[in-house]
Image 1 (cartoon, rainbow, N blue to C red):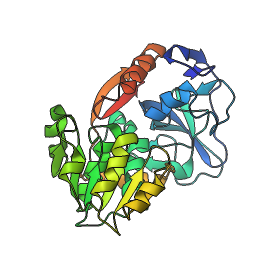
Image 2: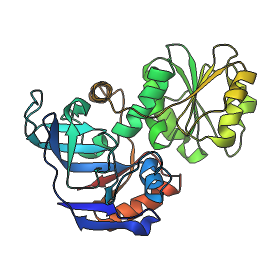
Image 3: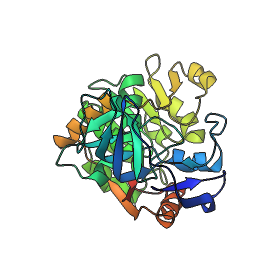
Image 4: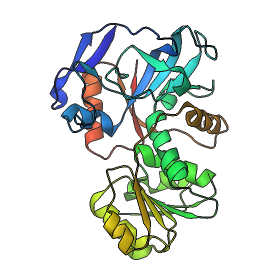
Length: 311
């Protein structure tokens, strides 16, 4: 099968198209013929070699960890799924990713794709949607009536976080450049702060939960707006500054996504009910050039919504 791989760490130039062995399903797996995948910052961070301490893999490495497609083969123990099922998934993080025509997925990580949702819309969801779900609910314990500040609301994760927080009955505040304000209000944001013109830490106070997708100065200033005693910060960019959190009498936690088919099915159900939707900002064809161009766009940090690859 065709795949886009890296044979060493480095720039976008390391992305190459090559023939690799098609996966076969182990006992508790299915093989999915991909119709779409999507780009996430982990893809190019891993390509650059930033995560090689965490993932000590041999080459070639197939990047990509979002799958949407059709099951073509099922393992001997698989009962719930059948050949022909439309599914999507955030597979386990292995060196056999989704920049390929086929990928093997553990059956418990699959979610059924509603007929009303396209493969492109589905491929945008798994990594970003699950990250938002786990940050807000699994770790952030966001409740109805609470206030949440979501940084970078127009980004891949932010788009889902705004909608999920609104669905949960929270008061949703986000940061974005002015050109994206209308979109974010349409997704349910109650307040959008233009980070280019305003300092959120001068406007906000007594926030229950901050979802930090930025790190650095943004994270440091976020401690100032949290409600003392009960305020909490969840970050997806490394370990938070526990000393700063302590000095503001709030809690802080860094999280790493755990693939979860049941949570993904919850999101699929909300999509079917039109409570949540994907915002696909750009699509590229599955090819070496398509992936190269998609990485280039992702690296700008200014893509709106998700970048999707179609097969």
